[in-house]
Image 1 (spheres, rainbow, N blue to C red):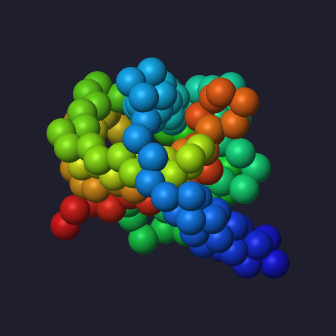
Image 2: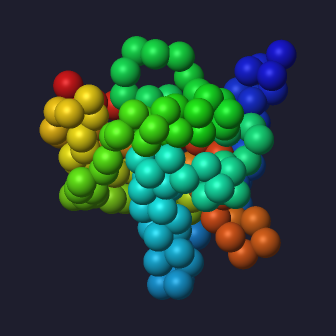
Length: 152
């Protein structure tokens, strides 16, 4: 039932926002949005549950770059903590290409990404594409969903 409700929200919220027509983010809003996106990635790799708890709403859905299950807020934060607890470390983060579509207080951020991290004593480079959804509430960007793919 929760999945059905969330799927409905993820379908209808963008449609309602799109009905407003596209908007252009001012420089500060765009800067805040991109800073929030970077903070989310860095917080995940650092196991920073406090930051993730504040920015991921209860209805969060995360689709990772593998074939695993979709993540809820709780499972995404748990995965982040497990990564950090196992000694995993982010060593580089880059978004070579980013496009933003905004509709009122909803923004879609499409990017290519390249992350370098250590996991299990190995250096790992992961490149791919991401689609991230952000909603501005009370002047802050929340991050209700992301979808990553490995680009392969």
